[in-house]
Amino acid sequence: MSGHSKWATIKHKKGATDAKRGKLFTKLIKELTISARLGGGDPGGNPRLRKAVADAKGSQMPSDTITRAIKRGTGELEGMNYEEILYEGTGPGGTLFVVEALTDNKNRTVAEMRKLFERHAGVLGGGGAAMWAFDRKGLVTVEKSAATEETLMEIIMDCGGENVADDGDSWQVECGVSDLDAVSTAIEKAGIKVDKCVPGYVPKNKRTVEGKEAEQVLSLYEALDDHDDCQNAYGDFDVSDAELERIAGQ
Image (cartoon, rainbow, N blue to C red; front, side):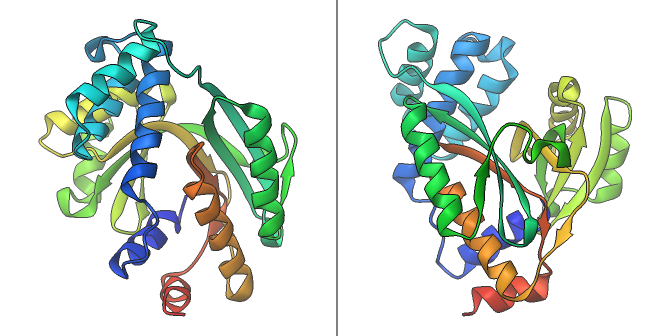
């Protein structure tokens, strides 16, 4: 996901972040609900829910809101029945995107995703349109100020960790999906805060984009990431630091 978090950091520093509190809470509540539905309502035995709860608390979500979201997932309370959907598409310059979404109306969401791709010089594809260009991995994000690359490599070597990648202001630790909980736990036990811990997608090869093409790709990525139903968006693009600064300064 090279370039993604670097872009988000630059936008945040310039006061242009679109991660408004309401949208963030909507996404967090969906994740709490689906995590509880799939793995049970006990965070102690459900790594995905445990991370969702930590993220919610870190965003100052009220405890009763967290509890209600979990109970909707376990069926103790009535609520929306969210469905996990995976979308694949092609962006400007032949870039490829994979979008993880949670929706209570897949017909509405697919129509909106199609429009987003079309508005940003892309095309929403069918199954397999982009997935071939990505590997399914466990992804653990750690701020660079919290640890060095060498320290992280030493920690993860014996618990399934595969790689530590530079992602702007953070390190992205890659591992097998089945090793995700073990890797994140090992990092936390070493006294290092984990910012994000999710199964995700890593491009097999990165496609460098620049100029107008880079502007279009980042615009598409922002639009996807800002959509209420999008939980995570992944692309195979790479934009240099100089290009990111140039585009952010426009």
